[in-house]
Amino acid sequence: MAFNQRQDKAIYKADLLDGFWSPNKYYGFLNTFKYDDVKVVLDKYTIVEAKRVRTIYNWLQYFSPESLENEFTESGFIIEKLFADVAGSPFDPKSDEFAAIARRR
Image (tube, rainbow, N blue to C red):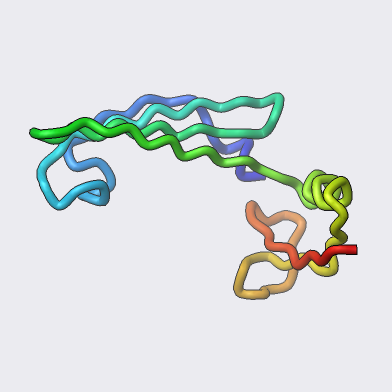
């Protein structure tokens, strides 16, 4: 599972992510926090430019097919089909990603 590959970390780099956050020069800080009990990861980006500082919180929740099915069921949905990706490739239980088609009951 992709969640198991994530780790707490702290990174600093000029123009972090190759300038993704701004066309201007900046310093980027990435702090990653992993919450094992709820299968959630926070990537907190702090972008420091000459005239401003911004913080972006990117929360990622990880699901197994079983845990996603439980979430859907509790909300009145059922999973009709699982795929390996959003392009519709056949589902592979060993893959780090999957996509689901669900409908309301």
